Length: 228
Ligand SMILES: Nc1ncnc2c1ncn2[C@@H]1O[C@H](COP(=O)(O)OP(=O)(O)OP(=O)(O)O)[C@@H](O)[C@H]1O
Ligand SMILES: [Mg+2]
Image 1: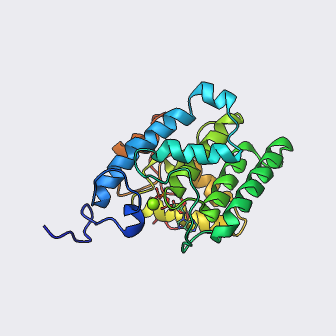
Image 2: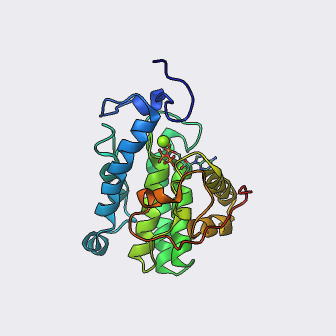
């Protein structure tokens, strides 16, 4: 059968095939495989013991978290990218950008510059802006933000409580909020990251795949700049 670009049988692009461990050729299958691996990462990172003893605002933790989320999926996990992307800083700037971000976040936390959730969301935004890994940057930076929030006394962010990796209005709202945050305006991203549930073509029943620890509030509402 010839793979087409219709949803469900989109072939993997070269980026996704590079270092892929399982023998997969379709995006749908990779998404499903990845999701299970990511859930392992959630369980690892949000275990109370690990939260207590690990500091997420350190460079080894950032790479280890990526490894824990994708170790079954890609061979290069936990290593920074060595090729330029359409998004992200230049390759040679990654190694210096990460410690600067983590130092800033430690300062924000120690000096209560921002509320805990805002520290988490700012870390998320700066990290996807840096785009340190060849893939998995969005999911990784979302979980890192959750870990930062919980570690410093808040609860995990919701990210709309839907699967924002899937194409749809909720992902558009997330990306729009990120672009606004790129200009140092964080209220939209904060609201999205704390939203109860954002309209999406993805069934709300799949919310637990993205967010396994909390039940949805049951109220569905539209939020974010691009949601109709
Ligand atoms: N225009 C943009 N502005 C800011 N950030 C963006 C933009 N486009 C994408 N991103 C970020 O990059 C991420 C996608 O990068 P990547 O494919 O490495 O991550 P992923 O975890 O595999 O993807 P996903 O978020 O779909 O699960 C998005 O989730 C988002 O966080
Ligand atoms: Mg990706």
